[in-house]
Length: 369
Picture 1 (cartoon, rainbow, N blue to C red):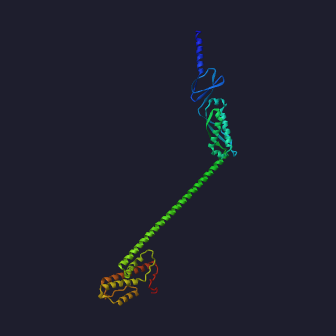
Picture 2 (cartoon, rainbow, N blue to C red; picture 1 turned 90 degrees about the horizontal axis):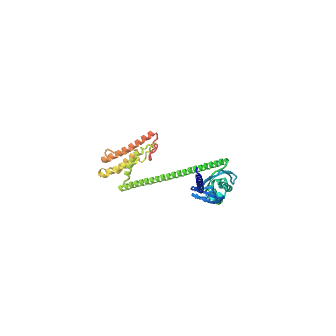
């Protein structure tokens, strides 16, 4: 080998080594602390950097991204002397690589111990129930204390969260029983409130229904009474307008008698004593009409009165004499009225005998006759 080549190779190797030792490429979100002869010199930023070979060296490589640190469960005593295990989650970020490397030996351990100490101070002034319901307050106090302590270490605590609070097993059972009792209580209260509301609504509905029914009945009775009043008023006006006399009323009375026995609820029927008087009035009415139509053939008033009295005495309608001067239409009408009255009486007696009820004598008749 040529003696000149060997020095060239050695020189090339030395140059390559020097270049490799001089150039430092730092990745994004990384920071390198450089020491020169054992003393902090500077912090390399991401990208291409040059250092002095042999004199400068990289002491620490730090990640400046936000990181998560989850601590192990730590026992903490509450104000009511109960031991609970608390897990915390810490979100932090390195803001000063030089301070994080030279101000504290192990910043993670330091943060963990500071967190435990702060938790014991905070939770030691709270009972178990307040501890379980005051997580936001505990987190805020933890973050304040950690920010004050880690600021000089070049670390910023962004967030602190309590991951879990585990009370003893006996306390868990007691809490479960208490929560179950509370749920049962709330369920019973809600059920009672529902029944109460249902009863109130039912009562209000019944009340409204009764009021509406009463109002409807009232309106119906008022309308019915108004109708009956108008009907009576119209009948009264018609009677007075046509100048009806007692004879017409007696005739209408005889027409009404058959309707008294048509009801199915009648077990007996009373024969009124005014029957003979009504028959006498109708007969007299037709007699008066014949007298008014044929004045020459009228009978003496005494004979007519005697005949009517005789008919009333034996309870039968007066019969026309063969030599009567009544016209045929008046006699036929009188016979028809007498037949209807006799038929109504016979039907009433038959229905009374069929019902097994003794006949009650009418007014004007004695029970011994």
